[in-house]
Amino acid sequence: MKTNAIIVRFAEIFLKGGRRQWFTARLRESLARQVGGEWRVRELHGLFLVVHPDAQGNDLPEFEMGQSLADGIARTFGVVSFSPCLLMTREISALEELAKVIADEHVAGRSNFRVAASRSDKEYPLNSVEINQRLGGIIHLRTGVPAKMKDPEVTMHVQILHKGAAVYLDVLEGPGGLPVGTSGKVLLLLSGGIDSPVAGYQMMRRGCTLDAVHFEAAPYTTPQAREKVVQLARHLSLYQQSMKLHIVPFGGIQAHLRDHVPGRLLVVFYRRFMVRIANRIAAQNGLQALITGDSLGQVASQTIENLAVIEEASKLPLFRPLLTFDKMETVALARKMGTYKTSILPFDDCCSLFVPPHPETAAKLEKVLEIEATLDVDGMIDEAVKVTETVALDN
Image 1: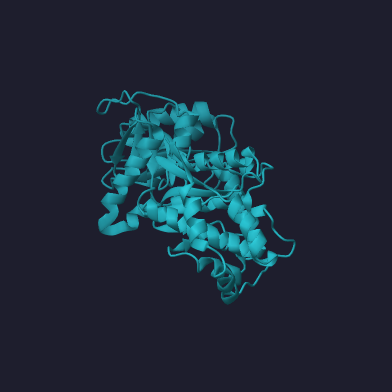
Image 2 (image 1 turned 30 degrees about the horizontal axis):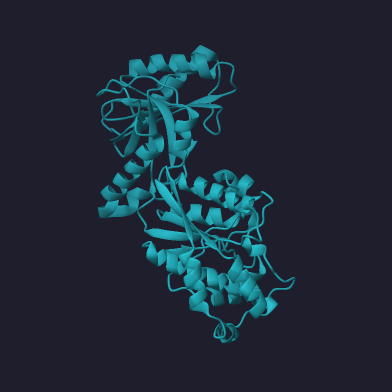
């Protein structure tokens, strides 16, 4: 079937009451950015339409939705679903002629089909059931293929608008959520593993703009470990206009802690220092919260006791969007996002450095604070922040 527009649907924004117009404007900006400046984004009856660059008024040239265009829409948080469609007159005779084309090109030879009509304009002379019967009857008589209401092979969707109709065959899934930039700015503690990129994705999906900080353990880790994290950050940056990746040289701090902290507590101390440094970087860049990929009970540092001791080091809110995820859920989302293959590349990051075989699972804050009192905590953090490198990832 020929197409001349892409219908883009959103849902959660409808709940925003007096702020709906502002959220809609942010979604339109995000969608326009993702599909590219040459494509035009129009709003129509609670939908967005992506139309060809050469569109003039109601004259919409036909085109096929390429993969890059589909990928751009699929990366737009706030989009629930989208469909390449044909915008046309809503005269029933014209819809009947198109039903014949769909019958010949898409239904003939299939096991079953259905017509699914809906009306934005309730003044249209035919109701949804009558439209289904008229168009479905034509397709059945022309092909002999029976109609099936549940899980058909082909569905002809017909949406009656106030000044026309939209006809489409496919409904493609969007990421849902809220448009990026509607819920504040946050800083992701980004490792080279599976979890933290997914945590960042989840916060962007709730409307947050994301920057990232990575703690690099060179010379104890390889350049490939760093490049792996840059790739993950670049992938996340595709969902928004730009991103900063702050790379903190952390190997020296880890070596110092190894020599001055009981081995069983090393991971807790690593994480507390990371949180403090991330707080400082966030404050310098106007960011409002920290994000980690912690999942309750997944590893030794992620027990309730240890998470509480680590969080005590943060002045900013520390969000853990994966806290209740099991590993299979996180892996499934990483695959869907496209970060999984990068995350499993065999290059270790600082989280595995000097880790004892049996780390503490129930750290006591009093003990941790007692040991920290013997360390030059502020001096170590000052030095780490001073030598932090910032990589700008612009789209």
